[in-house]
Length: 317
Ligand SMILES: NC(=O)c1ccc[n+]([C@@H]2O[C@H](COP(=O)([O-])OP(=O)(O)OC[C@H]3O[C@@H](n4cnc5c(N)ncnc54)[C@H](OP(=O)(O)O)[C@@H]3O)[C@@H](O)[C@H]2O)c1
Image (cartoon, rainbow, N blue to C red; front, side, top):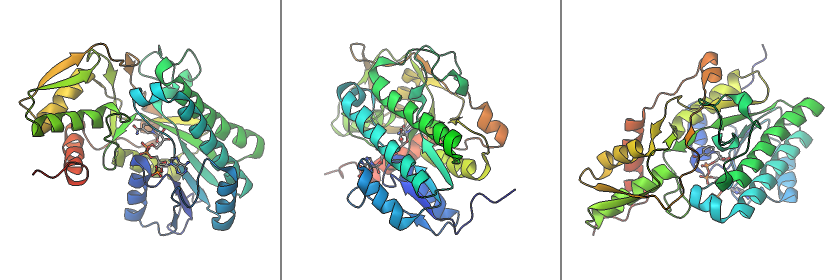
């Protein structure tokens, strides 16, 4: 079997400043890869075809990890559908096409569990893609991500490119987005409980009924999974990456409260949207290959809050 990756492989991490890309960068460094290429948005705007072609032509990566995109929680998806559809479509179209043009020999595209139908049987198997209508609040984002998967599959089918996709569940960890307007539920809860604690408020408002179920994976586990897949995955199409375990949003909110502000009371705002009733990935495919997560939610929440305190929170007066 030819070696798919070596420490000298030239690997381009697209989106290296984000939650996922920065974790992948840390992992590659720790694993001894020393030809890792990055480009910030000012150097190469991935939504501009000419800038992607020119960068790829001069840097010639052998492997591409596509972790760039416009990402956000339910509020952002609901308010900026055009941006979510346009930017994500442009980014993957440009990067995947240029990877073919400039002879990239392996590409891993990161999608999201949002690609699956709203009323999917649970846990969600890879083959449930395109078997029913999407959750309306994030359908534009999901459609962009589905087109990225299909682009990888099509370039493989027509040109023989070794391009494939991974579908991570909800992620959290260092470098997460804690802006309440655009963040996902877990970092939003960390910020809300922290601000309530520092402002001496007894109650914390949480969106929805608390009954919907979600799965969460620490981004360091995802980074490990990406490296594992680049080395070991010989299949085609897309593969789920998650823990295979979920909990209700109420249980999540209580867990965050216990870490950040145990004295707080939860107040549910049932006027606010809460998305699909359940989204749990079936991770048997990646587990059969030999990968499983190692960071349990309670430990991950503690380290995520510590990261927030060190990097985001205002120092106490
Ligand atoms: N976060 C999650 O829970 C989650 C779950 C499942 C899947 N994913 C997938 O993982 C991938 C990365 O997500 P993330 O959470 O790491 O997002 P993120 O933290 O927002 O990071 C996105 C990265 O993409 C870069 N980027 C965006 N538009 C760009 C452009 N036009 N040109 C160059 N760079 C651009 C950003 O650069 P700047 O630093 O300049 O903004 C940033 O570095 C996405 O494909 C997402 O669908 C994420």
